[in-house]
Length: 455
Image 1 (cartoon, rainbow, N blue to C red):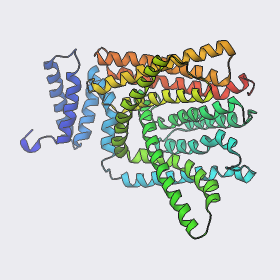
Image 2 (tube, rainbow, N blue to C red; image 1 turned 90 degrees about the horizontal axis):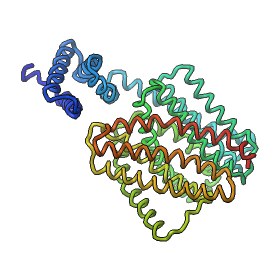
Image 3 (cartoon, rainbow, N blue to C red; image 1 turned 90 degrees about the vertical axis):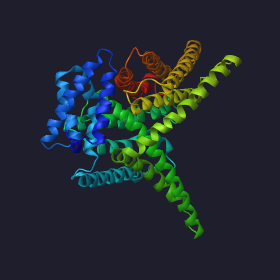
Image 4 (cartoon, one colour; image 1 turned 180 degrees about the vertical axis):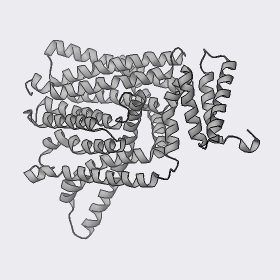
């Protein structure tokens, strides 16, 4: 290769990434790594001579080496998704047309969500006056449209579409058939768990292009965090819009409160769900810069709060209140901790060696684990003394599930910090555990109400 034919900087960056990966493997000597790199460079040059771009040639060459060498195969599996993103998002000729189609489908799904949330009003069910109905069904007005957009974008086959639709139908039956009164504990836990169960159904639509891939499951975790960031930003912008809307109309003597409460709020809340999903899909580069920063900001803050709580608990010796509101609060806290861990895992370069932030994450997980154990002891003590209720049974199960996840996550993080385990083991554990959450959420929604006589 002459000086004029030197590889572009982007290609050299990919060679450097590959070289760092190879050199990080203890089973390979330096001479072996150099030989592999020479072979890879030769393959890339040959492929570029046939007319392939530098990125395309690198991807194909790594894939070919993967068929010959287990090490390269592992590298190809872990990084091909990133390389394909580089190829797809760099302005291919068909990209504008695809973007317009995505936009049109998203607008259709957002409109469908907005219209569906108003359908009950045709039967006398009012958004303001019938809050219980909407609390049980709100996720059913929004998440099917997000799943439809993602299934269309992934080109999901009819069988998977039928499975996803079947789960949403099952959720609709569970939300509306059981005779749950307004004071029923089962109503509260169903309303809290149904969105979780349906969100994991959305995950099926998201990974429709490769259902068995742990990497695609991790991508869905990343999508979840980015979708949340975008939805919150849309909600904040919508709040400002509503304030201006109300203020300007009041200035001319009109009272828009009824329109805002019955139309603007419900329609905007559900329509923003597919809009946020579309933004994640087409504007990933922007939020990928924001979300990891937020994760690094809140991880030390939550760690400090949890450690402060444990210290205060040790000094006061006061028991933990395990009434319904407190149980929801502690479970929410543990879910946020798990969310921070999951998103930081999905956003982290698996090749980077352990650092200070990884130690901070271990402290976060261990402190959450200690709080989980304390809450579990309080719940089991109350159940043995006063009997069980739907709230306590649901909290007990969730804390056991989170305990198992956090305990093994702490074990894997410690192994990674000691360089006994690769970071990929922590990724695989989290993606493998996702069906456990789905199973538990559906169990609470479908089994708990009749199990506790709809109380």
